Length: 545
Image (cartoon, one colour):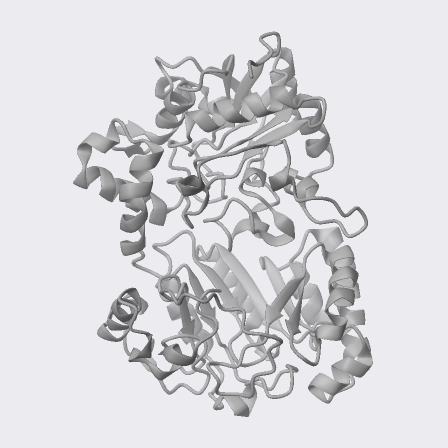
């Protein structure tokens, strides 16, 4: 259907040469295949047929440099009185960068972009009615998606004030009627909040509604970020263009899917997620789950060893760490110092896994103001009775009160997000719905986790086996590393006994362990469908998570 020619459609881009969209260093002026990333982005956007104008916003003192980068394009550049701050949604997206949705509280890739009132006023003065928001690093955004999003809005504007496409990050975009964008900015939220599940207002998932432009399935399924905004992703594009220089000039979405996706998988030269066990103190988990002495007691990790691990991550700007393992990190005497050291030395995301028992007093106050993104509390019950049945302790009321107190404090300081965890099992199934309903209203996010038998090393209390029928390569082998308190690196977190150790960080570097024969042979075996190469792999039900 034709679009309404009287409506002004504009692309809006916020570009900062000092800070990237994710809060890391900016690469907008960095050449990629001989062309600066920001220049590539604007030239790619220009290929869309339905855009009336492209508005680029930047800090006023960067106007001259941005004008030079965009010389010869149709972009109109506007200097802002102050830099636009990083989106407050970034913390919710750090563990889901390769997906367009799936962030905490249903945060979307579109929510990573931050616009302020000044941007909105300039867009309004420029007669923009429908604004397509594009990341400045999205150099390979699909022009037909931009046009499709515009067409979808024009054909359904009586029903929706926005439109978006379901596709991998970097290929897709979201467009907003300007008054909706104003409302989102005023309420300091994003489109993900509108699309998220609200138990008080149940409705059909927006992905199945007329605000969505449908793209080929091949564009939707890749678990990859087609945006060169981290060193890992930039290296993937750079390697591709060095190998095939012609693609640097004309690189279509299909080219990316054919050539970049397999290349990116082979370029995972360092784990994206690292779980660090800093002690093996007993913790309140479901009866039978390994922890403390059950998980082979290991000495407390020293601050020096922790700092050595973090130092080896400095070359990467997308590393997310979880302080967890088979202990209780809140009991570690150097916890706060560890957190600040990790943050100050470039760790992208920080999560803590805990039973919540120690989340009170001075420690809770320190955590509330610490640079932690999320605190995952393994609560597993909605009643004191079930809590006691599962954990043989009577701390339910105390822990839930402490969580409530912490939520109140973090709301005032924009501190760490509390994520209540619930392990779905035969014993807990009766409380699952009530647990979700209660905590989703309080925290905006809940994790319902399947029961893990650790490759049948403990009694399986799962409601059912949730692993897909066709076994594939483990998703964790290329992205996740676990480090135990004594420095041992197991092949994965299922090896709580430490019987399958790939190396020790006190003796070998993280990079050398990641690429050693143990890991390399295991990955090759998985690629070839040889899952019996390791006894844990042959019994694993967690490979798809």
